Each structure stands twice: as C-alpha cells, then as structure tokens.
Image: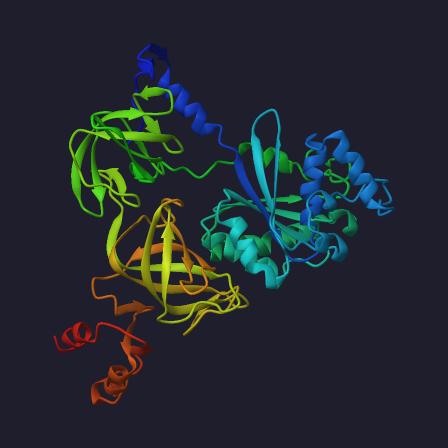
Length: 501
C-alpha cells in the first residue's frame, strides 16, 4: 500500500481549524530525509576509529572545543603529518583510550550538504562480536576495512558474515593504509577480487571497493588522485551520499499497539509508531492475533487530524467499530498480513556469558509485545569455515539458528522484510538479563518437530522417544537420510502420529 496520490490535503488541527498543505510530499520528504545508518567493521588495527574520526574532521563535524580537546588528549601522539589521533574522537571509554582498542559501539552523527549520517564504530576483537552484531542490526550499509598490507583475515570474514545475516546488502570495501604499500594497484585489485568472491558466497552483490588512507584523508572526503592516478572511482563520502536506506514499505501497513487511548466515552484510539507501509482513512485493517476486521475512520497526531500516515509516524488510529485491542497487538493491512503461528525459525546472537540454553523458557520481547517462548538451538555458525554446525546450546557471542515455540499466537514479519516487526530480544526470567538478540527467518510447520536441512530429515524429539526411534530397524537402515536431536520437551504424541502416518 502506498500513500495517497492527492497533492494537497485539507486537514484540521486539534482545535478544529482547517489546515491545507501537500501531505504526500511532506510524508515523502520526511521518509527520504532519514539519516543513512552505517557501520564500520573489520579486524583489529585496520583503522576503523581513525577512518570515522577522519570523516568527522573533514566534514566539519568536530567543533572547535572538541578539536582543542582532541589535540590535548593526543598527548604527543600526532603522526608525521602533525595531525591528532582521530581515533580518540570515537574511543570514549577510559579502557579504550588506555589500551588503544575499541570495546563498545560508538555512535556519531555528521552530515554533508546532501544528507545526514549516523555511524557506528564497532570493536574488531572476537570477544566483542556481540557488540558488532548490535551495531549492524540497524545499519543500512557496512564499511568493511581491510589493511592493505595484510589483506582479508578471519575477523574480516566474520564481520562480513554477521553484517549479511543482519540484512545489510550494501558494502563498501575500504582498503585502508594503501599509502603503506606505496599505493600498489595490484595489491588493491587482489584484495578487491578476494572480497567480491566472499561477498558473492554470502549473497551480496552491491560492493564498492575504495583504496584509501584514513590517516592522510585520501579518498575519504577528498580524492586521492595525486597519489593514486590509477583510481578513478568515487570517494567514500560520495558513495555514502548515494547509498539507499532500507525501506519500510516492503510490507503492508503495520502498527504495533503501544497504548489504548480512552480520554472520554466518545473516543477510543490505538496509539503506536507505524512500523511499515502506509495507511489512510477508509483502509480495511486486521487486528492480530485476534483476526478481527475493521476500517480506519481517522488518523490523529499530536496537533492534527491526518489524511495519511507512513512508516515512522507516531499516530493514534481510530476505527469504525468497537474491537478488542490491547497493548502488544498489531494492526495490519488486510491485504498484506504478517506471519502468525506458534512456531518460528530465527537467527540469534548470544549476548550473555551463560549463553542460550536448550529447552529453557525465556521471555521474548518484540516491540510492545512480550511472550513466553521455549528456545531450541539447532545449529551454530562456524565463522572460520562459514558453515553451520549442529549445536545443542549457544555460548556467548555465538550466532545460531534456533526454533521458537510459543504458548500463544505470535505475530512476525521475516526480518529481511521488516526489521521492526521481525526482530526480538530474549530475556532470562530469572535474572532479567537480555541473553540474546534475534531475527525471525520463517514460520515453522504446524508440527514444529520435523524439518529438513540439505535434503535430510531432522527430528527434534524428547530423549526417551529419540532413543526408541533410533533403535528401530527402519531408522538404522535410513541413518544417512535422517537425524534425531534430543530435546528436553516436545509434543511427543503428535510426532508419533506423524511417523506412524
């Protein structure tokens, strides 16, 4: 569904006064003006913080007092060019400055005449993989840095894989420190070729490779043709200015309900921020998970009655009939509905030392909805080989595939289609710690205990039933075609009926 095509909208404000303005153009401008969110990633000492510091410096995002503090904090660390240590603009924690490493995700804002940006500088060390995944979860584009002297490393591949899992499709390969190789074009071409092959294996086709020196500022904001006449491509900032943001319009209208507003007997509205698509008065909608249908009669904001709303708008929706809607429900387009069910497949990143335990019941929070869920790890990504290996539990920093089993109907979009309605966190009910962040990949079958991987049948069964099945002559004869995984609990009777059938 798209916003209405009417050029000029006649609306009324909270006091009932008529206001005329181009509503569609205003909505489109607000959508298109969203800052580009980007992440810098790569191995240790590839120059991520220095690159972002240089971007801030050359785009005049560093105020005079900050510049003075930067020069003072550099404490004689200036390089041969007499420039300060740009990494200090990002490394805000005392431990980061003392050790000269990045630990936490640092977000910075800057802009050019063409657009604004939010950049996340993430750690390069393996033990902070979860921090990198956090930064990637909201990014539109990834800048993957590689030291021109050493080329692609294991951590380079790890970060590229994580960024891809988080739904990032635009990559900039920043071959940094090219000046330390005497601007060797052959070296740049070799690294670019290797990374493009890696990107293709991950399903990524939009890659821009740039040779640059973050320290000298060559091909960052200003071109480096004086040193690299053989490179005639864009600078980093030019690529960022032309990059696209992830659209929330790939699915129909989505409004996770945050609050039911009843200021008086004559008014009932449902408040929240539009998480996808658009809506206008007269549209038919469905309330999930109940499945009740209604029509939109009015869209109210703080001071206006609107004739349309798009993703990102905070609104109060008024419907044409009395329906049972509660906080945590979702109001969606009738002709483009999300997935509903009791079982879903997901990717998760474990965030706590205790990891994610098989069969344990967690709280799953997605938007304003919180539900009980049982989590069964299925496999873990081996970041050295890029292959998924069977796993019974997921330790901290692990990336895994899991099966989610809910007690009541759950509502999701695949994360690939909508980051807001396809993302969730897992909360340990015993400690209230956030133990994992996750992304819905698909809805499982109604049974939830049988699925396939690479043409093999995978059965997730209670331990006693698994032992009985594995002892049968039929299973022994088909061992190459099937695999049994023991779980702490399951719907044994349904699975037995399926096997007998």
